[in-house]
Amino acid sequence: MRVIAFLNQKGGVGKTTTVVNLGAALAEKGRRVIVVDLDPQANLSVHLGLEVEDGAPSTYRMLLGEIPFAEAVRGTSTPGLAAVATDLDLSGAELELANQFGRETLLREALTQWREEHRGQRGAEPADYVLLDCPPSLGLLSINALAAADEIFICVQTEFFAMRGLSKLVEIVELVQKRLHPELKIGGIVPCLYDNRLKLAREVLGEVKGYFPGLVFPRGIGINVKLAEAPSHGATILEYAPESAGARDYRLLADEVLAQEPAASAPADGARPEAPDARSEEAPAVADVVLVPKEPARDVEPAAEAES
Ligand SMILES: Nc1ncnc2c1ncn2[C@@H]1O[C@H](COP(=O)(O)OP(=O)(O)O)[C@@H](O)[C@H]1O
Ligand SMILES: [Mg+2]
Image (cartoon, rainbow, N blue to C red; front, side):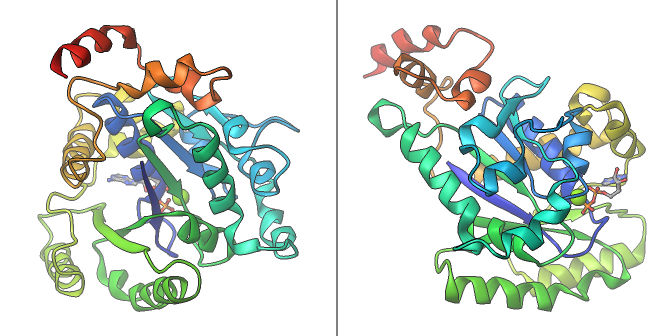
């Protein structure tokens, strides 16, 4: 399982768009994905058409420990894609969480407990990807994401001010590495809202590549109006405009992300052998229920057995 925090303290650079649509593209390719809305603005939840009614499971209640992670996870209209949604309550969370013991690691603890309790037989993980959508700040919610993640993906908009703020961001990442999470690494830089016809965008991209050698996803996400329209339909780009350039870019990004998977952690050939295991356990996790693939997982078993 890869836990990835999508980070940039700047707003409007494409974090939420990337978490939703990369998540959907990974799910389309057979991965079990959970996206977590950590932004009090709830853009991710709205994008996925998820409303959080009063008292309903939310990021906030999960962080406060009122409900376990599994209970906060809910299904979306995309098979294989589940979400932890938030409501505007999270805006007070930063203050309220500040008084909690172990306030920087609340999300990490919730996730760790969930991974331990919902491990399938043979140690199968309860999901393949957990994508954390950070707010546009480096406050307590983002720190929680960094403490919980294995990797950070930084979304950068290829415009003049892109480099400003990146050094601050890297400073915070280093601080988290030093104090909370030595294994945390920057796993990728996603150029967003990229217009390769603009000399400036190409120059900025070159600068970003120089700053993060080998980490920049080569394709990037172009500007595509369908990506901006999809949220108001409560749909991912793959649902709203599956043939659009935006959908193509996120599918290609998903391929690049999958290519990073170490061979051992990738689900075995052919599909998801974890699902039958997880389901055979006494109380399946919510995530198991909402994440089981559409096609019967049983079909996988004979093939997997025949191979061994
Ligand atoms: N590649 C893109 N092309 C066109 N519009 C985009 C693209 N990526 C994001 N947007 C739009 O830009 C705005 C900011 O994107 P968003 O993902 O919400 O950024 P962040 O989460 O970093 O604040 C949103 O209105 C979104 O729909
Ligand atoms: Mg956002």
